[in-house]
Length: 56
Image (tube, rainbow, N blue to C red; front, side):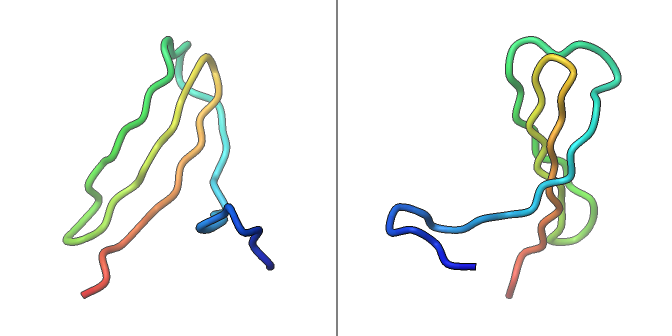
């Protein structure tokens, strides 16, 4: 994958439906373990998330 001059990175996000309508646009970070978590972006009935871990 080649990035353009303006891009820092591209990430594959998991997509899905929210449990209910989300209004307004919401960003959340949830801890899932020591040095790990999930970032979630949600609006209306759409949700995107990606897991992450801290590197030491």
